[in-house]
Length: 197
Image (cartoon, rainbow, N blue to C red; front, side, top):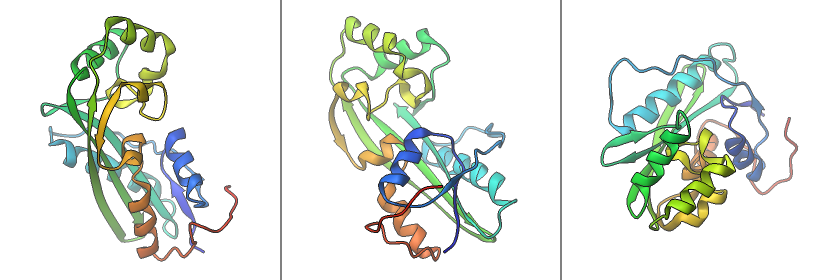
């Protein structure tokens, strides 16, 4: 069976692949993630996913390499990972009581084969009090997450409505990834038991 490599150190992406019984190895991409010019959110996540996947794939031509990137966008503005507490607070205040979009781009590379796609999910927050935001910041959860929240963690309490793929918001649209793996020739059924490397 073809080896699968996840070009990401994200614990959330690792857990999602494990959930689907997909055996994989993690090799964190060292790619420079700075883009030469501003792009729309959907193009940004695709471009960054490609950078990550190709950086690893060049040394593993016989493996399927998965690169992914997730961003939050509000009113066309990209909210990345917060720089510090003040930046995280600013993002959460902006998201309070509003609908925003979460984009996750995925790139799969094997030798000269490449497939790139993205998924967009709309998320609506409840109105957040200053006390709720402060307590959430105190938890430490927001600081390594796009948009300064984690839907799979304490941030779930802020979500009023979601339209789209929940797992894409977590960091990987796993159903789409699974189907693309099949197209790349991987033949491991998701329902079988398997061990991760």
